[in-house]
Image (cartoon, rainbow, N blue to C red; front, side, top):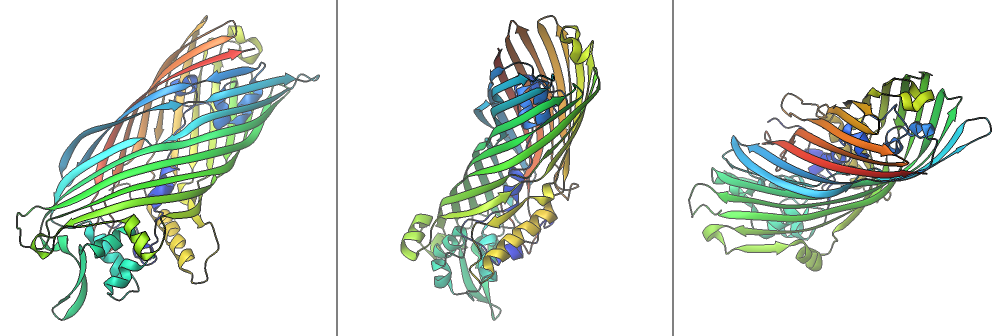
Length: 515
């Protein structure tokens, strides 16, 4: 796997808690959730309207409401990951969690001219980070310790190990590697060098266990109106709440069996939390040229999220006869050499543009009872390359802060590309019962799509019942996704990568009352 970012610029100005390009993708490569009805038709709600999920796709759809409505949508998701790393297949690991689909309140008022004015407040889990990835394999090419050696070698400490350990400008991993002698200095053929001990043993057995949890929950406040039953306009604010936790255990062990090569094993553990609160806006329009046809357009601005990151980590190193086992924690480094484990910054997510269309069978809006069903489709364009980070506070004058964030933002542009989402679905009505089905597909967000295989496919189905002002909907969503995971990133070697295949099943129930 070839180097996929210009990583030297990031290493040269590494910080306590390093924002990485993957952090931007995590908040960008998301898929629609919504109510059970919306998920049963593949999330294609951009032009249908009259549904609480319109708050999160196209708020103009709220303009089709004629009544007040209260909705709640609990759900449950189970995910299994399978990984392949260094030609070794790894068994599936599972993660499960409860979810909240689109839930909230809608109220509609009809004016003297027959046009509607609608207000809605709703909440929805727009991104789900719950996952468990594990892979292992024998590597005779590179070691994760080399990333720490690179950071130290490119730093301004000139090989001064004591200064590096005491400096909060280096990452915890590098400082720990120096403290436990995993990374050291040596003179080889008369040339002083920074060395990572595992890279000289010939072969290491690597294990990476990553458990993540959390998501993005968004509160939406929207207004909508109808104009002559032809045009529907809507817009409002979104308040995303970010919560993310990653617990990682990475281990390398000498695979040669040699007990005298100054390396036995090392284990790095980390608990990384990220939380934040932000703001975005959504604007939309739906045009209904006939009762049977609807066309929708929507724009989602980037979310500006103020983020706080915290990290706690430790490293244990066994260097055979070279020294006794060494152990150090990030809390120890902070207590003895200063520094802190918290950093604050701003995250800007991508723009989203949505084009959609629907066809209603049997009467359209003017005769709801005559409607027999519909087909609908959305196309979404997401500008992943525009996602970026900014420091919360102004640079201290040295330029290091700006240089760091500029390096990460440049990496985002070089790693990722804008992607498309395609969604379609349909519904058939049988008096008070409904049958639904749909699908959604999201394209690869990586520039190097030949080597980094990634996409998301969802197959959906559901049913519903509506009568006397009450409705109950249920949906099942089968997700099949491909992605990649890098255990570490090096600047002077090709990078090893684990390929992931994720299968998920989501069940969601929506209960609502019209009054």
